[in-house]
Length: 107
Image (cartoon, rainbow, N blue to C red; front, side):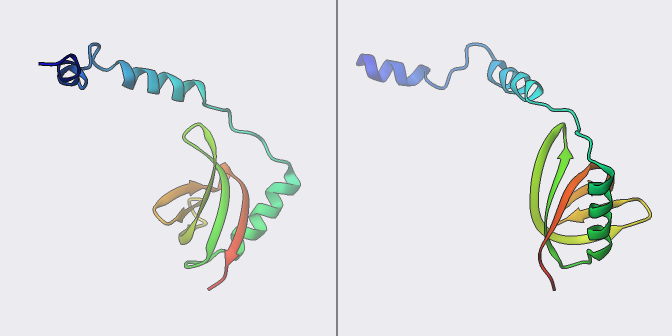
């Protein structure tokens, strides 16, 4: 057996089980950010746009989710003013976590 063939049989072997997963987890925790505050004027602007949202409207939303600032694009599937949340495709977003909303396409 050649040296290259011998090396191939050990390639998938993980000498320290779970090390890569632990490193990825640690890296993710270090990249977390705190939720930023928005001004009252910006909050009022977001509220006005949220009042215009209906099912089927395509939107882009900048928000805080899972300890990160993210921008999501999709179709509004639910707007719930009682519980102050909306669904963009299958992602649930709380109104208080929204930084900015842009309507991309009306129905």
